[in-house]
Length: 372
Image (tube, rainbow, N blue to C red; front, side):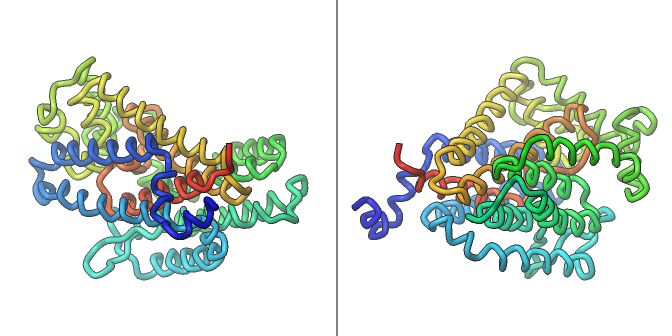
């Protein structure tokens, strides 16, 4: 009876979604818009970023609602096509994409820059969820680990060639987490992870010079304090200058005076702006909201009606965690600067739309959870 009613009134799935999760998503978007305004109001060509972000946020929320109303299991039936198309678009981007700051990551879509890698990550999660939820799957077999690794490695390699090291590496923990949820023995995953760590020194020769310099600056930012090390130093100063309560909205001097570089303040370093203007208290609120969002993803995975839904929600939750962890860690100097934005908060059209879809997929799984 409940299924017939839900089918007759599809928008009732919105009422079955996790209200706390959705409230946290909306609050994070609102916080992001407020501080994008603060970060961009003094910069040339940046003053209207907050208005553009509102447009992207509205589109993202519409897609989020659409994904909740739609049955997530339809994604499973289309996962192969979505994955194949995403790989094709990534290859196209390598040859015909826009080159910005040395990386060919963008396509010009009717005058709007679009970053295909953001959508390729979601397509990869859907494909992994489909393959790892097959009823004939035996997770004890090495072939399962190899199959999952190949599916994750294809977009990883194409994104690395752009080159976009930070975005590519998010696929590593996502693939590992989904393999673990699928039942692949932890000892095998630990073995693969250990071998990967041992191979990191060899990977040095494949990095571009600017990527190598970011790593050198991470260990010694004062080797080039006015150049490559500038962003790291100014970000740490901004975070520390906020104190307990912050200097007040629109009152952050690192941001207002341009010490925190204006082109990246609304994007990769939006947390630095928030920390300076709202201090430790504001940072705690931000982390609490992200905890609610990540907790909602985990609840969706635990209560999923089927294995595909469980894997889909787990993959999205891992992706969100990676972005939050890496972004916050790089702004306070715990990780090298990788250019990963903060979900739902940083400025960015492609990323905001992709995060809206990701949130909607998670809640589509939650709304159709198995009965308590």
